[in-house]
Amino acid sequence: MHTAEYLPEQPTEISSILQGGYNHPLLRSWQHERQLTKDMFIFPLFVSDKENEEEPIPSLPNIKRFGVNKLIPYVGGLVKKGLKAVILFGVPLKEGVKDPVGTAADDPNGPVIMAIKALRAAFPELYIMCDVCLCEFTSHGHCGVLYEDGSINTRLSVRRLAAVAVNYAKAGANSVAPSDMVDGRVKAIKQGLVDAGLAHKTFVMSYSAKFSGNLYGPFRDAACSSPGQGDRKCYQLPSGGKGLARRALLRDISEGADGILVKPSTFYLDIVKEASAICQDYPVGCYHVSGEYAMLHAAAEKGVVDLKTIAFEAHYGFLRAGARIIISYFTPEFLEWLDEPVPM
Ligand code: PBG
Ligand code: ZN
Image (cartoon, rainbow, N blue to C red; front, side, top):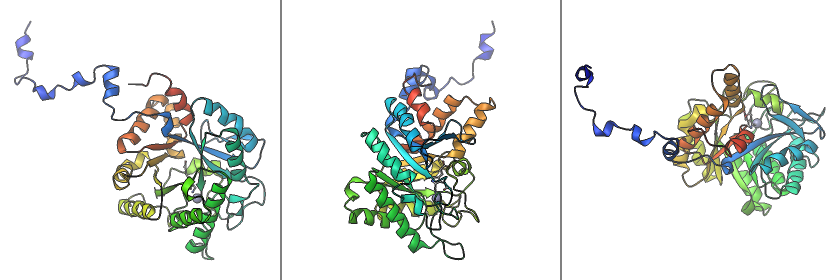
């Protein structure tokens, strides 16, 4: 044996020995500052106005659009597995329902209000959140009310969004989450809730740092909410706009938001980290959006990644960046995965 020639010239420094700390699955779990838990997950639900139908969404694997009658048994299965919170998106599919101001958004017989009431009656403990936006309900597919030239009419948009949010809260929603990105809507919503005597029992979760980009495609298929003309770049943030994101976070807090969201997630972890610092006294959430979800599925289908392993890795990233709440299409899977030994 020529052991001597293989010895390093310098002995390894004691401080260089790290593997003692993570050589066992239990140790690896101890290295996590925080663990994923079921109560962090909010599951997005697409509710259509075809009461008895359920329809798969080809670009969003395992996710369906449910009519209100099909929704209850589906959600019941998830509640049994530990589902705590949902966020509702209305999808009007019937002909002639969309108009320039999104009247269908808070139609008492429309999908969102009907779903709030049905879920509230069936699952008294379930935390019901509602996305507040107009794009699913407007004939032009934009998130607010428009001027003739197609630009956002801030005053009318804010007034309409506040009315919708208040009507969701009146119907029994625990939380309203404005995703429209129209300036000033958080304040109007909060004031509307105060005036309606509902502010003390409604959580205003603002999508504050919502970036425009290429990751919302499958959602727009699911919600039929693509703009007819133009894009959302004049209200959603440019992807390099870190300063704008900080200002939007501070603004929404000052306007009365109870919690804030960053969206998308994986490509914006620096913003999640910033948000957890700027909004350290608030629950900070992130939305693992449709495009991110679909990409992981596509990669898994190609055999590039293992779906469960990559999903845990992505969601641990959100925790490290400081998120306390995660809106995720993987929620049904995590409700099962978190009952199994966690991959470590
Ligand atoms: C509505 C809304 C969108 C998403 C959440 N709320 C789409 C958009 O802004 O076009 C995207 C969520 C996802 O992609 O999963 N404004
Ligand atoms: Zn919208």
